[in-house]
Image (cartoon, rainbow, N blue to C red; front, side):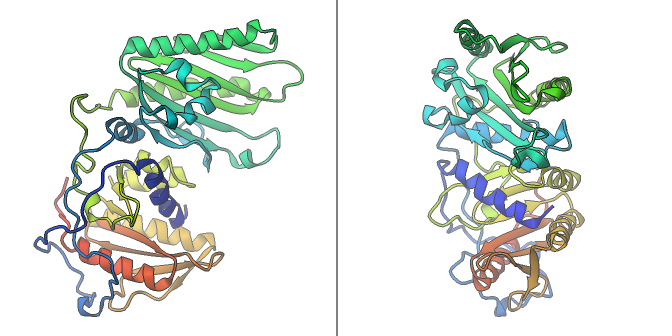
Length: 403
């Protein structure tokens, strides 16, 4: 696991959450709850970065998009059913009820979104990962896209499944003898679509399941010789996905959800000209990483939540947990061989800064304070040092007893 993977999570979250309502960065000062005696606050250079927590974020401007982002914490990450699936692929992320954002629907199902969505689709979340061979053209590559779509009602979800099924059957009727659409054995309510024939060495199998208000769609691209194993993997995934959705509590339809219900996003740095941000649990963060299994494990073991905006701030269950997050990211980053350590910020010897040896304009600084871990990026060492120094001052007022 590389620390840079968490940084990519900051960028990815902003790309899908940009339309969520932002907030002012002029928060009111609160009493300090924890400081680091090794930090010389008088020597800190914070540049133009804010040094106080943001004002509360309020409720989301786009109800359905924010619900889709929340649902990401309850969507199976492909490595959970096949540990080889750890290479980040696209599409990946959440989308709301706006049809212009439904491209992932067509990518995974092979059907035009409006065909099976219309006004009943509230949004969805998709996660995509492949095996190490997924970036090659060999016949050993595997890529799994798993998507959860939320509809207004169970009837709407069933209608969507039926519509997709009929669309596939229309292709068969148009003289496509190699297309097969059949029930998935061992998974009641699921059908699978695939191509068969001697000329098909690699084929995408698409699985569609209506479940309560949701439509579960998996697209598994792999060798036809592994079809039985792919079916078994998806059967396992569907079972796990149903369990996770049983733990998901949608927000009331008449009131937009809070963007930052646990008051964690307020401690991140703002995202400059791009308003917005999101808070993720371990599974939500794992969807957007190049090392999903390792990141999920450390965040889950430490009972951590992650807020991502202009910086990433992780709140663990204990100070020891925050330090474990720090050590995991920093150690693997150095072990990867891409990064090397550079100077800590003036007055802040307990912060660690690194430079990407393959890129001249990528610097990362990280720190912990009590239950909080923070990571920032900068195009220069000075900007990264200033950002992490400002992040320290913000976290001195962070609630160390938050739940």
